[in-house]
Length: 502
Image (cartoon, rainbow, N blue to C red):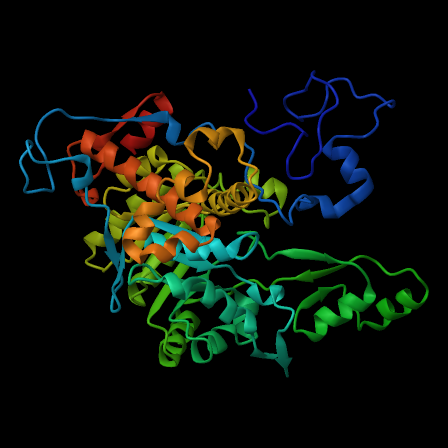
């Protein structure tokens, strides 16, 4: 059987025109000249190289479509009938609510969180409620790389950013709801660093935490964005971007004058980190006032995974996030989201083995987050159990953004008197229908009733994840999540059993 999708894809809205498919290629087994051209081959025949990347981004999210032969569904969750670990209460006293979900991380500046969850890097769609909801839920969240490209009022002088109002707008979406738990983190890539984003973020806009990337938006390679014309290519180059081909090349200029100019692309720079230069960069960030430093890493070669973890130990990095195959937000090449990297469950197992090796050497490990396709509490619980105490939190990216978008949209409909049929039985107002709003009122007071329903949606979604985790942990009679391990997982397939035995 083939695990890869056919030439039907949400990345491009392409679709096979026949129900008869040739599995190895994903093509229709009967391909006819009478076809109107609906599949990904037809789209590539017209749109060419631009179809390497999703063409359905914008107000959408895109994620992996491959049906990997191993994921967290290969495990069920164990349960126990006796005892109660991680609590001093008796069995007669204890309830599901006694499962402690709080966690803490950080080498020098400790960060407390109400939930073992992180909202990974995004800066698109309903990001205001994404960040605001994270603050309400008491978890850390990350502003995505290249945020500068979203700021129409960005000021650049001599290749350096001197004005970045967008950073204040982002902070203003988070800070009013911050209550001492979690942290707002700014992710910076190689181009951000070159243009001085970390400096202006820390010194002018009050950011205290920076996440350093070991890949770009497309994880393994730098992101490429097709530019509309020669003038845009010149403008991007003036802004400090690498542009291919070089619009200032005499041959390219002459071709443009003849109307024979090729397609232009802006190219993100590769992060070229070594043990030496990353220490210099980290020391610089700390001198500026950064209180916490994070790493972001994808599922690269195992030797690279270990090297990054060792760099984190040496430089007292607070947290490293590892991103496995199965997730995505729409910035990676389409086939890269499907066909590159370790599936998250396999990546996590490899990270744990590396951690055990490093721990034996006496090095202090950072907190570790695993992300890549998580959406429900059973998946989060399984990831924490498979992490054996080394994985301290799970990243919920696309799912949390979906909560931000739908929470706002449904709230707007309710306020307009157009209650979706699914929710009619729960009431007729936001206060009646949004069931976890009382929990927010208990934290912030009655003013919470005026919060954006998108942010309420993120809070409610994360609250549901936490509540679900508490049920599974209580089922295992483990009331402290640090006690979770592989004994809490039941393999359902030979593949799952083999992974646990590695």
